[in-house]
Image 1: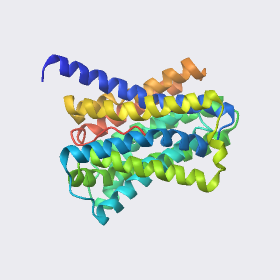
Image 2: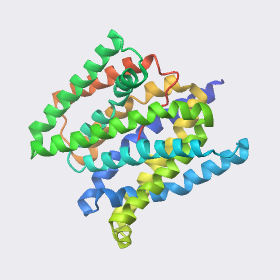
Image 3: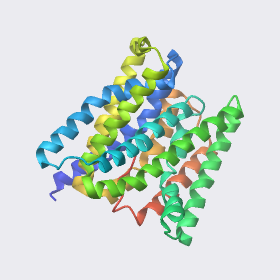
Length: 307
């Protein structure tokens, strides 16, 4: 690869990580206007749906795939439910209670959960190195939680929000375990497009079943934030990360993705005036270190997920 392609790959990887990290900031900015998590998620996914449909159709025409079987559709539906619908829903709920920085640190623990679930369900042994990395990661989360407990108005909010976001990380980790099998069979673009489209439809169905349709008409600031969330924290990062992987490979892009918690910590301080303390800085460093170390062995096979 020429130097220009490498530079663009690095640029896309960094911008993709920043875009995904910015999602939590946009959600926190929208909540003061009174919008609830289900409505905000429906707006984000509804605005993103046309892109994913277009991606799926374009990929099908380019590669002339065979039709999806019933088994394939069931697999994509399960991936869409776990990886993009449930994980996003729990994440949006959790951000009603905790800071954007703590949300990103907890959510970023998903690679350690993949290791644990692979041992539980697939019989893959956990090495001592992996155990040490997992311990490092959760020590960092504990420090970050301690920071938020000291500054939060209610410890109950921290535990509820942290629990919801951890549930999001669990859901995403389960998605990753099935994603590898699906990508081998169907291709990365096809899986991303149709699993994401199914998740968008699930989010819109959830909204239609539980909220009046009139709630989709929100104040201009909320609509602007929803558009920004769809474009800059969903559609463009998905494309940029895919392009970065094509130019650099999944391993380097995965490592660049570890910028996520650091970016969110900084943006939370800069935009949301979230205080930064020593515990949070140390916790973030431990989480990032643990994830980098636990992910090195599988980095060549995994795509960084950002949710």
